[in-house]
Structures are given as structure tokens and as C-alpha cells.
Length: 422
Ligand code: DSN
Image (cartoon, rainbow, N blue to C red; front, side, top):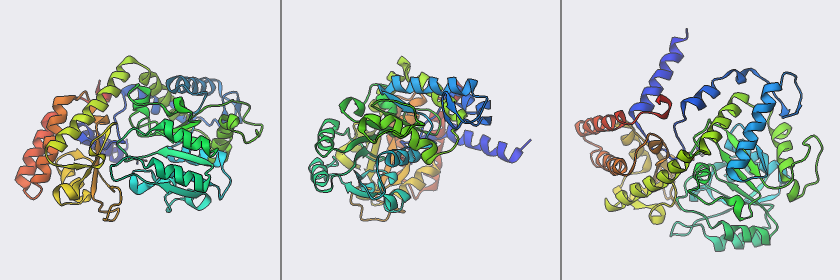
């Protein structure tokens, strides 16, 4: 009936099918995840938690949410899971609110060095409520652990936060945990980018290194619906009774902070889709997928390196690559993103550490392998993709050549269906 929206959905589906999705925080969900997301659970209000709700009619929602919680706990080896956060940003806010008082200090990674907006960027509301102190990376591209230790000792943060949206290395969780423990901070990891790699055994799990809280989005490498998740270690008790603020009580403090602290009714259809994605992520095929994501990113990085591109940190240990486009080809990341968009290659401009250019036209271009790997692409396709990107950048002022490259992108994607087509 609604042709306008129908046409837009069809056009977006075609864009996703015919293009190469290289934004490292995006992915393609399966048909079962889409089906759950579009299910009648969207009609239900379920404030509270399984067995402790405000409204009637919860016979199915209670079972569904408990199933989702149990699957998440098992997948990540956590004592508790809160599956209600509407997004990663809300998950992070709920943890800050659970553990900190206004004005308390949180030590997190600087946005300009790969950190995330919600880790204390001055433009966020969180930065008005809490006192964020930020650590940076070294010129080598690695976290400056000595600086983390120095800042932690000096500022005695309530939370030591590790997490990022543009960091291509594997953090030394053991070292970070030791620093946090020394100053008595809650150890929090925002693993939104790599949660799928952790679930698939292709990346270390911070919960195994003494971290008490792990937040994530569910839609990146984890390949679920758009949403958030908080995993924690400790004792789970009745969320209706305010517990003492101790690290042991973190799961209950988090539950109270999500609802009623920072959110209203949960999105039960999204929770259904999260449950399906956790089921999929526990399967052996997903472990293969996670390994392939890492292999594919390494091949992409090696190909760019061969072509003389300068990569932040010199390469990648996860799914993500940050190219210093200005140093490599004398154009900013925004120009590169636009040229690549023209030929169906979707990437995003991104700041590099200590960028001399502004955020709207930064030096970097960020890309990654999760979505193309979901389409079944492997090493040979990564070599082709790096080549297509390089050709487009080199021929950015040659429309005829760009049109030829666009045809090559369509030819490649035609051979690899979307997971939702299978
Ligand atoms: N927007 C996400 C990303 O692209 O990394 C982080 O929230």
C-alpha cells in the first residue's frame, strides 16, 4: 500500500546487493534475524525483567527474554546479560549511571585516537555528567599503556574503559586489567566492533582477563539486529531491591540502571532478533566466519601496503583498517569516500591519531572486512577489492574509468548473494 516506503526499501536492498559494503561497523543479517525483527513482538510492552513486569500478557516475552539472556551469557562466558539496551550508546550510559555519581572520573580512549564518541567526547551529554580523562595511542599506533597507567594513578578513575571504533590492534587486556585493579576502578570493555570476533573465538575476551563489564552493539561483527547488550560478572539479585554499590553487585546495578534508570519499555522484537543472532553466533560456521573476517582484513591490509598506502599501526590485527589517505595519496578521507561511493564501494572517512585536518574532512579512510566476508568473499576477492579501491582513487578525475570500475564492482557482487537471500 505504501509505495513510497516500499520503493525506498527496494532501492536500499539493491544498493546493498550491488555494492561492496566495507564500513567495518556494518554487516548483513540473515533472513531469520530479519524475520524475528519484523515479528509481532513489536506490539508488546514489557517494562521490567522476566518474571518481574509491570504489564500483563508476558507469557511469551518472559520466555523470550530469558532465552536471549541465557544465550548471551553462554556465548561470552558472562555471569549476567542485560539484553534490553536499545543501542551501544545506551548500554554505555547505563553502565556509567550504574557505577558512577555525577562528577566521577572515567578513563577512556580519546576519540581522535580511535576511541568512541560515547567514551567522553566533549560534545556528549555523558561528558557533562562525568569527568572523562582520555588516553591516546603512540606513534606506532598502539595504546600508550604507560600513559594509561600514569593517568589512572593521577586521576583514580571509577571506571577504566577500553573500547574503540577505529583501532586495528588487539589491546593488552591483562596489562589494562592490572592498571585498573591497582587503582580500584571498575574494568569496562566496550567491544562493539569485535564482539562477533570474540564470540567466534577469533579475538580475546576481556571477561577472561578480569574485566567485570563488557558492552557491545549487536549489529557489527556479531551480525545481529541494531541494538545493545551489557555482559557482566558478579551476583544477580532482585532488580527491584536497591543493592549496595559493590563490584559484586554490578549485574543488578546494571539491570536497575537500564530499566528504570535510563530506558523505558524494551524492544521485544529486537530482543527476538538478538536471540536468533546469538543462536547463529554459537554455531561452528560462525567461528569460521570470524576467522575469515580476520584473514580477509589482513589480506586487504597487505595489499594496500604493497600499493604504497600508509596504514595507521602499519596493518591490522582485527577486522578494521585505517588508511592515512592524505599521506598516501594527497587527498582527504572525505574525497576518497565520495569517489568510492560513486563506484559502489562503501567506506567512511575517519580521523587518524593527531589528525591535522578537521573531522568533516579528516586524513583517514576506515574500512573493514565483516560485511564482505558475510557474503562469502575470501582472499582472492580481497585482492580484487584492494585493487578496485586503488583504481578508483587513482582515476578519481576520470569519469569513464570510474564507470568501468563500477561495472567491475557489480560483476563481483553479482557472484555473492546477500545472506538474507539464502
Ligand atoms: N558508528 C559506529 C562505528 O561506525 O564505529 C560506532 O558507534
